[in-house]
Length: 161
Image (tube, rainbow, N blue to C red):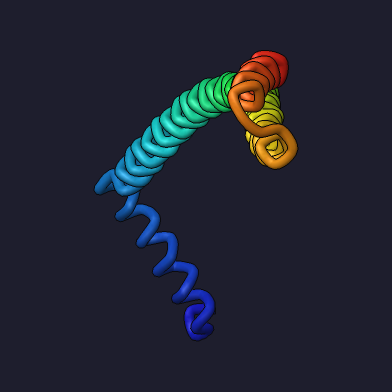
């Protein structure tokens, strides 16, 4: 029995365990394990607290994002409405401008027509007077001719102008 190496290993093991017990190694191991368990528990509590805090921050950012998206949608809607209103006003102003310009152009055309008619009448009166003067001066002679020519010219000018 003492010749077997397994026996000596068993005796050495028992002596080692007894020495560990005598020096309190088991207490040191248990204390170290307790400290490690406390440290792990503290880390787990800290991780839970950080997780809850992160969840709150995430919820806060989600609500802010939703609020920002609603606000952006309102801004876009308001901008579209404003653009529509400005386009409508611009269209109305343009139509008014075109109508005023058309009316002004028509007025100028009417004035030009009236002036042209007056110029034509004046030219026709001058031509008629000239023709009457020429015809009467060639056919009628003397004082009577001069009186008739003057009277005819005056009448033609009054009627045509």
